[in-house]
Each structure stands twice: as structure tokens, then as C-alpha cells.
Image (cartoon, rainbow, N blue to C red; front, side, top):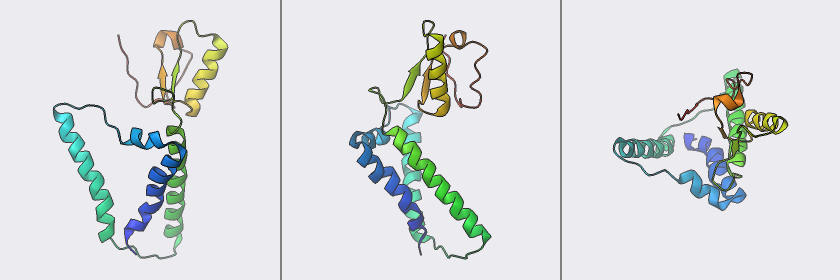
Length: 152
């Protein structure tokens, strides 16, 4: 069998499931911000690599050997599919700005602040807008945050 069959679940979740949840989400997923300069080159390289990821599997042959590695790989494949399913489900339900965001500022009540931060930690929101002084030193987001942007 060709390796393309391994992409079927990804394509189903990414396009069919996403469009069933929210038709506008499919358009948002394909949207790129306006680009300039070297970003345009990076965009075309990205599109080319995506095209190759879809074409190359047609030329690869997969043979099945039901060994322990097969079942380990199957488990990783299914886990990845479940994670993709969950991410797509969250992506289809953004706020009116297109992202699930949380704003914590100085006048946010302490109880609300803790609930909002826990929602961010749990993945209910992709963006937390605040500043270090507002959050204080007692809040640790090191396990949750991969990128932090500071505006001064």
C-alpha cells in the first residue's frame, strides 16, 4: 500500500471535521498575514514543502509487519490523531477576534484572575494578555508558555 493512506485521517480531521464544526474555521486555517520581503520567500518554501508532503507519500510503499514496533507506531499514530482532533475542536471555537484570548489586568478581581490563568494553563485559550507586574512573581507559567512577547 502507498504511504498516502497514512495521511487520510489527518486530511479528514484537518478539512472535513474542521468544516463540519465551523465553515469559517477552514478559511482561518488557510489565512496568512500580509507578508513582505524575505517572508514571501519563506511562504513559498512552506507551500512547496506542504505540497511535497502530500505528493511524496504516493511514491512510498508501506509494508506491514505486525511486530512490537508496529503496535508502538500505531499507538503513536492514534495518539497524534486524537491530539490533532482536540486541537482542531478548540481552533473551531475562537472568540470574535479569531483567537481564544484571556486578558488579565490590574483591576481583574483575584478570584477571576486565578480562574482565567487556570483556563490558560488548561489550554482553553491560546493567548494570555497581561504584564509581569500584574501577574506577579507568584504565578508560574513555565510549563504552559512557549513564547512570550513583551512590549515596553
